Image 1: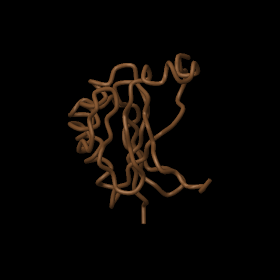
Image 2: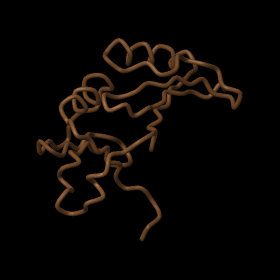
Image 3: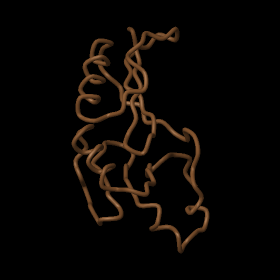
Image 4: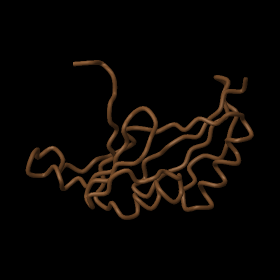
Length: 128
């Protein structure tokens, strides 16, 4: 095995709102839409949304209800003021506000928002 992430899949029970959020709110383009599996254009690591039910016959573990924050996607900005602009844009398009932009002690400006399933994600920029 090569120790390198090749694909990130977000599992969901309701793919419609998730597709709308990741395409209309965040601006990803659809590369492949099979209805229950949607791969989005992304440089580097492949990125997909998939209905949890696709895996039910393959592995019972996918039937378990998840709890808590299991992962975070972080989107970089070129400058600290772009964090504020990006956050406001995401929220105005339907992202759920989690944490307004803040300057953090580790030298970044960050803000947190959630997708329709409640997954919390971040926009950030280094302070220089």
